[in-house]
Length: 308
Ligand code: NAD
Image (tube, rainbow, N blue to C red; front, side):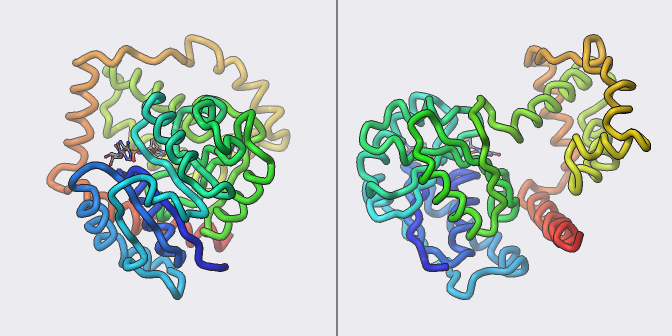
């Protein structure tokens, strides 16, 4: 794998995760974020997570010194092979930033948005120069460890762009999943939102606390989901007839009143329950320490997955 030049635009939680993954794989990174404290935050995150990355395995040329923070978007993207956009999830802002990236990028650069929600066809509407180079490449937090990246092209995206992008994310030790179409929320987040919606109903109705809902996943379905997704999990739960039996037996549960499918209103009371509940779950442990615990666990879990 040759060393590439990557650009990261927007260096919050996800942008920083991409920076760490790109650096760990031996690439050069140019980063841009207008927030005054952005560079200091990124360098702190790198210092904090580098030992985790080393433990997981980094490229022989990997170095934190391969990161350059620049003061404007043009300098970040002008020479990049892959540009990863990670600005806040607001349509107008995303379109404006992507149009500017499109204007300043090399014609053969791949321009990827990390958006959790927007379809690529919507985002590329604002790009007049090379809309065929725009894709969605949606990662999962922490980006430097979780391998999945969902790739989707829009109406104007060239097949060649998707193929090149898939190869680059493959070489970044990721598991790129190329979607056959595009939908709001892509795949992973659509599934998580369905779960999140039901979890909020359960807390709102006083059936369980946030901690109890989390326990119901951690000691139950969550353990299986690290190995098998919802379809194969149910297939194995259907005895000799597998999925056929499951559909006959539990098909009716897909209908109301078992499933609510409409999000509860985020009232002040519900917000308080959820915010207080999750804070209480952390107790005296800081979010940074919880992240370390999560990362240690993920590394072991991914090791197990590779053994299977
Ligand atoms: P964040 O709020 O942590 O970071 C956004 C960053 O963008 C901030 O540092 C901000 O200063 C910067 N920014 C604002 N305007 C900018 C501009 N004009 N140019 C450059 N930078 C600018 O947000 P996040 O959670 O990192 O989310 C970023 C994107 O990633 C969103 O589209 C989100 O949907 C997507 N995403 C988030 C997650 C997640 O779990 N947080 C997961 C996958 C994808």
